[in-house]
Image (cartoon, rainbow, N blue to C red; front, side, top):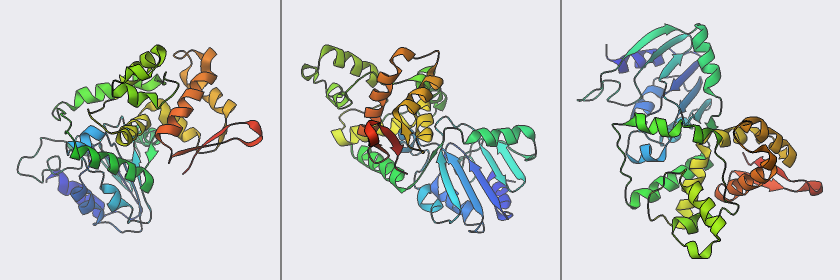
Length: 310
């Protein structure tokens, strides 16, 4: 039996819950699977949206348009995701196949894949599901629109040249220790674009050096205009492990000292904690500047309170 037919048959049996987990998901495949299910059941999907992978067509962000039509469905992004895991109620399939035609043997040139049925009561699988949502970003219309804007704009410009056959190298890049503990050095985030455009004469030597160091952390095409550059930086900020932790932490509005204490806990042993207040002030400026639709700041009783809008 084709791997895809295994998964289709499993989805048809759903009574209460479906969990679909895959780094790469194509809209047509995703829609076909969900149309087999009762729209009233709970549907949870976890995937990853790396801009360069979307641009090369290995995955579709338009799955958001499908999933939002289901009343009890949610879509989550986990940037270091590599697992392929499909559970319907108490039945589970795991293996190597993404939700693409090639992976599910629904194309003329299928991949050589593996998918096996396992017991969902397995303790290791329960632990996997528990950890799955650590540092995930939940997709909503605002976040989808931001991704869509960046991708549409970039398609009009010079396309990224990505070796889609060597995803391993991309995974190494995203799972590096730098990604886990990185914090910006540049005090004024608006100076980052000046550096990107090589307008060093408009910056101090310290700002220029810090901006060069920060730019090296991001993967950016050439010749972006300022707005799309800012959007690019904003989305890649959300891909970073430490930023994701802070993103979840500030769902509840947090005072300045609370965030500093949390940042201290998350970076102990990596970051100079003597300057933790300065580091949070800098990061806060970046988040407000590059993701203004996501974050806000209020100052009641002379104390800064940072929060997520949604």
